[in-house]
Structure formats: C-alpha cells, structure tokens
Length: 379
Image (cartoon, rainbow, N blue to C red; front, side, top):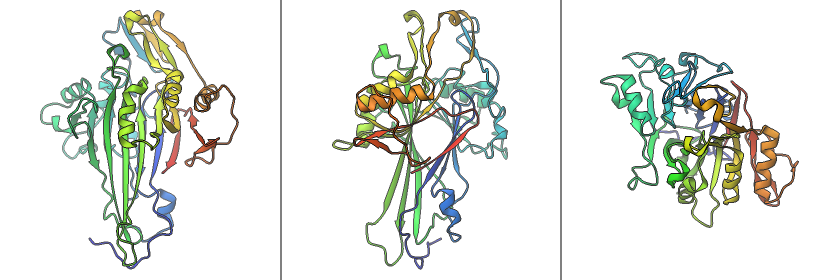
C-alpha cells in the first residue's frame, strides 16, 4: 500500500516513545516501543501506524527460588512478589525476550516454561535472544524443533564485522503517517568486560537500540529530508566497567560527538564477596560514577537488580552490601557529572523530557521504580 501524498508533512517530526515497566523488584523489565507515541497518534485520526506496542521482556524471573550452581552454595528467593506471577498476565505476548546472564535469576526455567510456544499458542511467535550459556539452556527447555526461536548473542567487540549486531525489523502496519512513511527496527548487542579480572561473564551489558526513520512522501517534501530518531537502552543488571561499553558508544558517536546512553538500567547496590567467590558481584553507584566521569552522557538511570532478596547457602554469610536509595544515588551521580561533591537541586524537567542541565552538563534523571511501576520516555 502506497502512502497518500495529499496530506501536508507535520510541523515537527513524529516522536517515538518507550514505556518501561518494572515487573518485579529485581531485574525483570518490560520495554514497550511505539513508533509514534500514543498522545500524538490520538490527535491524528488518519494515522495508520500501529498503535500496538512492540515489546521486549528482560530477564524474566517471576516464580520459584534461584539456585546458583547448587542450592547448598547459593539460593535466592524474592522477598517482594513480582507484579505478575505468570507470563500470560502480560497484556500481549512479548515480541522479544532478552536474557543477559545464564544464572537462574536471569535465565529462569520455571518462568520461561510458562510460555505457550506450541503451534497456535499465545506465544508461538516469541523470539528469545540470549547470551552464550543461556541460549543453550533455553533451547533445551523449548525442545526439539523449536531451537530456531532462540538466537545466541555474540560479544560485540569480539565478533566479526556485523556479526555482533542482531537487527529485528519492527512491524508498523502500512507505516504511513501524515504524508510520510515510518520504518523502525531494534538492534541488540552484547557487551562484556574486557579484562578477565573484571569477571566478563558476570559484568556485561545488553545494548537495545531503537531506530525510527520518517521519510516524507508528499509532493512538497524536500528531497533527502528523512528524519531518524535513535534511542539507546543499556541493560546491565550487575554493572559493566566503562571499558566494556566505550568502544561501542564511541562507534555510535565518533568524536567530537559525545557518547550518550538514553536509558541505563544498572544496580544501585554494591555487592561484594571474598575474592575466591568472585569479589564484586554488583558494581553499584561507584561504577555509574566511573562511566559518567569517562565522558559518557546518560539521560536517565534506573535501579535494576536491587531487590533485597532472601539468600541461603554457603555464600549467604559471606556477602556484603552497600545500598543507595534514590536520593543518595542522585547525589553521587550528579556529583560525578559535575566533578565535585554537591547536593545539586536543579530541576530535571518533565517526565519523558529530562535533559536537566547545569553549566552545560546533562544531569541524568534518577529513577528507583517500584514493583509494577511504569514510566514513559519520549524520544
């Protein structure tokens, strides 16, 4: 179907949006993407761009305990019941499931077996993108003949040209809107710490980069007037050292551009164990400060993987934690941006707009989202 060229192009380009929902008090999130955010769609009755969001489910762990290696070594359990306890309670089947770690609090068998991937089932079309180790487990749980639903992600830095980026086209029905055409896709990447002493299998991140392109097709449109929006979410439930992200960020924004993360899902809690048990488990606020001091701009930071879980087994008495609440995290994060210790009370703008500035420096919004809470981020 061709887009009508009778409607004038909009005074301003369409704005995509992402709604983030914290489905648990820990690391399970739902990202819902719309190529044109809902308020704008409602003002243009003639739009034929899909109003159904494209959804990504991150690290689903909703039920049961989470043993690590063996229950006698470490077992974790939720102390706060997730806002949903079965994947069928989601408004729609997720389009994509992302799994960042192979441990059971990220790659949870009992939760993933809730999917109905049988022919004609509710989740028949779901696709799973998982890091090495987790992908093999999920393929085994899905069973023979369904291995094609699972894609193993490759470390972006170590992959051959192009192999480290998985691109998924986002359906937008006809893609027509106000005398133009919308095309959209999401790129998924895996990023691990560089050095072995940084524990790369634990300290890693997933890049989730939405790209939306609007091309006017009206007779009055200026040739070459396409407008592209991008939005980068970094999901790192244990934290990843800056060295693990900077090559990718500077690839997206070469100098003199400033490397930018729109949404950073990162633990606020610093969790440590003795070196023989791995040392630092979650890198907490100090790692966010390091990332900001390395010259990266971040628009919004969301607490991830910070639930005060019930821990049993050998490890339980050997864990130490330092926790930051939202206000304390905000002070530390803003101080890192300003390179000095100050409480900073500048306003951050309206929800979804952000971009609070002090002396020309962006101060990130800092969110500690409650269990079941949602927030919208407009590009």
